[in-house]
Image (cartoon, rainbow, N blue to C red; front, side, top):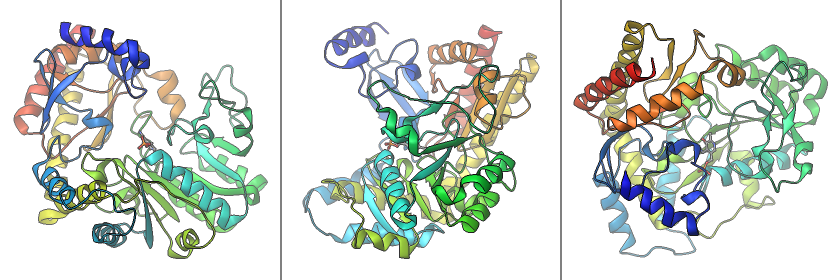
Length: 431
Ligand code: PMP
């Protein structure tokens, strides 16, 4: 890793922390620099190959440099990049999203999940005439001030569960952003019911990841999303699903199709672009039409040719052969999840693997399930996972520090077997 280390020194002089995004924690022992990526394999500047389970933090559901996506982008780009106006690809991608996603009556494009979460909240406030947004502990909805607030986790210091203590997520934030936020633990419908009974008429929207992916891979407990849907209907609140990670990763109709609960609005990004920057806000037609009247949302690069060509090609690949991509990921991911469980069991190590084959979480914990953020914050040994992650890196397997593993259509059975060999050795190292 000597060349990576040299580049990091150079990078630190001009880039804070030496990286373009806030991935310091994700890049222990230090950020690696890469020169080449293809399929499921990344190669660093020192020539080391890695089987990649980071996948650009999720978007590369088809793997790195998918030939059909690259060809579509190149072909479209030659005809022009930015029309600052309409072009047919934009309609085509919107039509596909409206056909596939249950809640999608209409759609607006943008460049990132963070942006379109903001547009969704603005629309919900316009529709309801209310301000407050209810969110859940441990969910991430982008880097903007009003959603970056987090909660103080240690329960021995925290107040009653009804009112988790909000703490600003960043220096430079104004305290005012706390005023419009309500935060509850995930998967606790009783607390949500209590809060709605008290303040339901102040709430514009419930904003939730349909499966919590940023701190653990925590599926909704049966009835939880249905319960939120019911409360939203009862109190005139919009249900917004942040499908930035789950969208297209958990299936062609998103997590909302998989779990059978339809929100009013949903944000998609990451996987829909095949590795290129594109995001979409979709939702009920009558609400979305407000963008044509009195709700502002714009962006110079929204709907640009490169993003739309990439999305059109990626979506076509995902739909090919009746979802062959999903069957492949399901089979290999199951093999990997079961394999990790078996190896840990053989060594008598307390390892929990939970989630879905396309996105699952590995944690060192005695818990039999992680159901909410505090389980993750308090009962998962993140220091040990950090050492495990470095031991994997040394054996040619790259995973995120947070414990979430992403799979792609490009992973092969052989790579899964190699990964399990690396996992076995890494577990031995952290035993
Ligand atoms: N929502 C969720 C659930 C996310 O995981 C992320 C990014 N990791 C975002 C929103 C923000 O999306 P972006 O990074 O594209 O702005």
